[in-house]
Image (cartoon, rainbow, N blue to C red; front, side, top):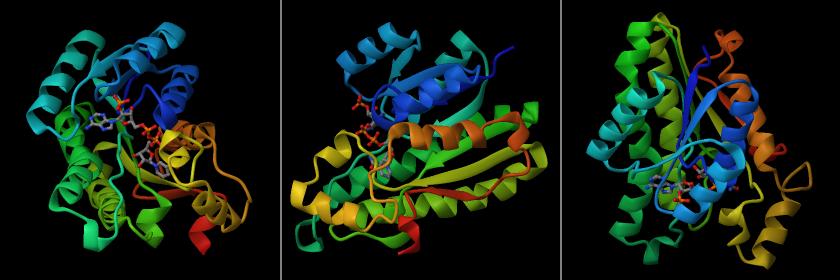
Length: 240
Ligand code: NDP
């Protein structure tokens, strides 16, 4: 039986490539999203992967959605916490709302989703969880106090939960992507982006598929001995 994989934010950007990568690896994939119905419908039409709408920052909505997904498709054995947002601004202009939205969506969601699948994975003695962090959570970034805090939190969250999961064959890992050519990065002003690319040793932006390949590796049954790790997929940028 194909293992069921849930990819949050899995219908566009990096998440779409992750969903398709896992599908190609033989997983039964469900993608979640927040509100972009058009992207979700187009993605399902193209791939056959079902999309489910719920807000990952809402604890109760997440518990209900995971329950419904498991009833429809079977127990979730692979979870990819990919959904994320930016609300950038220098400290002077960083409002409490911008802080809360990013912390709740990018970090709170990891708690909400992991909480929903954890007991089932432990009872079945198998689980693969991958949390999508960021090179900006490793190194910080100007104007991203909220985002860097959330992503840095993901890296600590991953190492702590990996220790809890180890006895039940649940692995918990993180990926720290660098700048990937998606809508999120295309929103960065061209002159700033040029400077960013100049600082990437590999000399290019990443692709969504670069990140998806890492997820497929970390969620393989054979990746049993890899847990609590952060895989840097950023063209070498984490070294600077
Ligand atoms: P996109 O903006 O392209 O897509 C974001 C996805 O997350 C969408 O599917 C969106 O759904 C979903 N989402 C956002 N908020 C919520 C919410 N509250 N509830 C449910 N789903 C939500 O992002 P990227 O593909 O660029 O990024 C994916 C992940 O990779 C993020 O965690 C990001 O921080 C991380 N990352 C990205 C980098 C990059 O260069 N792009 C670099 C490093 C890390 P909908 O379409 O409905 O809005």
